[in-house]
Length: 103
Image (cartoon, rainbow, N blue to C red; front, side):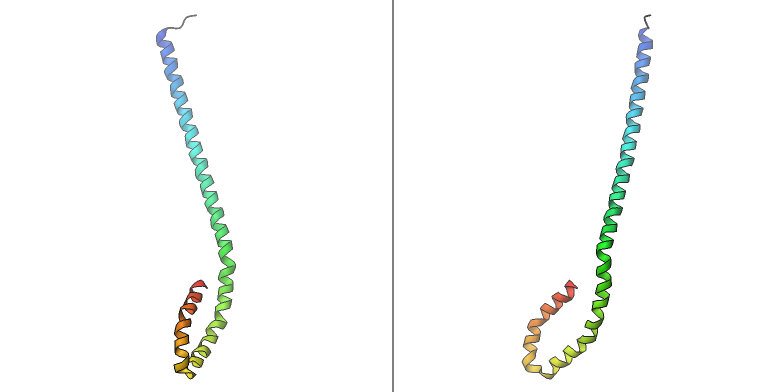
């Protein structure tokens, strides 16, 4: 049975539309999956960084308290031996600052 040229062209158009629709659907699905993967990876990364940071936060708070108590003692000692120690203290100050930054 010979189909007319018009019918064949119509069928071809319909097939092309379907193909295009399927491709668009597939692309949308792929984009959705990619977004989901990205989100889950980001969540995993955030959780890992939280885990890494959490114990440090706790110990820093514990470590800071005795240091705060000890600070005035150091100041008093430097005042007692003032002229001799001042130069040494000036030299040591950058180191102390660096240590504070590292904490």
